[in-house]
Amino acid sequence: MPRKIIKKFLPRHDVIRKQKALAVFGNLLYDPNLWCLNRRSASGAFAVGLFMAFVPLPSQMIMAAGLAIMFGVNLPLSIALVWITNPITMPIIFYGTYKVGAWLMQTPHQAFHFELTWEFLFHQMSQIGPPFLLGCLVCGIFFATLGYFGVRGIWRYSVVRSWQKRRLRLPKIKPLGKKKNG
Image (tube, rainbow, N blue to C red; front, side, top):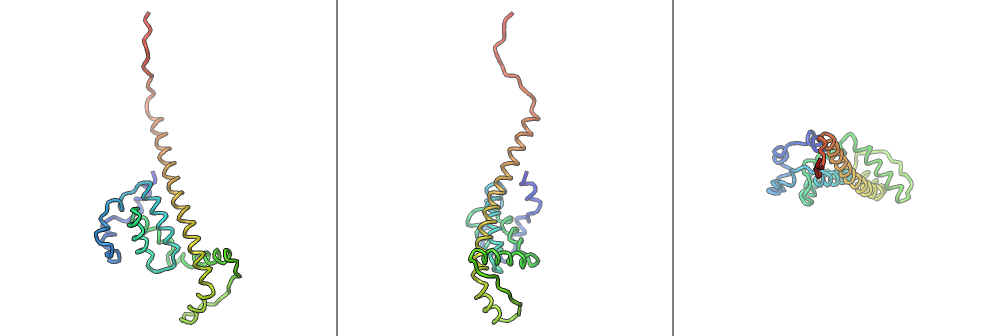
């Protein structure tokens, strides 16, 4: 079942509750719905986590926690999924989102060289910012939707399969009928 697989990779409640960054949520972290793992909470957490992974801000985890609390979905899973965009994968993913946004806006690809200055940042963001942000929004919505329906489908398939296996293990019972007399 997907629940067993997902639970292996999730941090425990007490570890997340002790995070100083999540202290802004106070007693909201004690809601039991944030910690249960069922089809609804897992699929919603995938949607929240995957959408927030494409938000190009450094506070993705806190925003994912806020959305998880607001929608009542699994908190650890939504926070963990934000780490799809980590320092190693972020350049590749955000370059891809820029390409998607440039394709949607039908703007030519902008070539640039990187400099660590404020002038470079403001100049480049005025040129590549709109396609980049549009690409982040579109990719975030696409992958959140894909994750939501994908998890729901996999979960449902797993439940149906386990019921079928259970049905095969049960002994065949003959229906009770009228006895024929002699």
